[in-house]
Image 1 (spheres, helix red, strand yellow):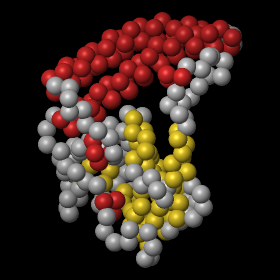
Image 2 (cartoon, rainbow, N blue to C red; image 1 turned 120 degrees about the vertical axis):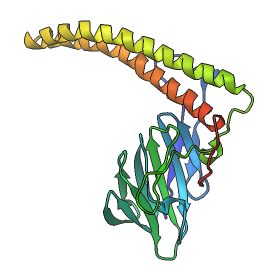
Image 3 (cartoon, helix red, strand yellow; image 1 turned 90 degrees about the vertical axis):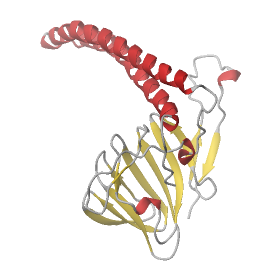
Image 4 (cartoon, one colour; image 1 turned 120 degrees about the horizontal axis):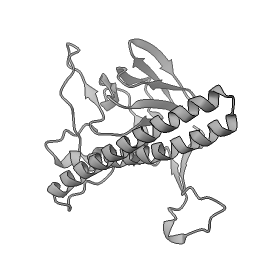
Length: 240
């Protein structure tokens, strides 16, 4: 297997002054050493994993209610079952399972398999499992340790609940404000496009994007708060 790594770095605008306190550093991850979840945010969960021959956690038939999942095989060969189709995947190849597409994977042969996978977005509960009859099971909320992160055990759970509700209220307020802007600017955009005035259309598009950007950021804040609350809001089921 070649030298397969992931890198993490702070995205820095080269035109802005560098601020040491905001630097996250540049970290390099190795698929043979860092067998764990590496990046866990509401937008994505990415990890390296090593699959052994035989039964494991990924061979269970499951879906993701929100997430699209990408698999890249780094070494070894596996058999994927995705949405009723079966295919063999080897080193340097990738496949994906979309939201609500049932999938499972098993190792082919006697050697372990190294694989990169990512799920976007990452919002609890992340997995939906099915019984022997194919019936959907209740949601499986999982401890944060399943994703190699720590559960916030110091903040009172009542505060987490209140913070979750506050984030939703802020999202609703931003969404309503954005609707008003999109309706107003949408008419301007139609007029500019009908007139063939692409410069004016571009200006309107930029004005429409700014409130949407803030809306998407607040949506991520809601997901982040929910992921912090969910492991403490009831029983959890460890899968890994």
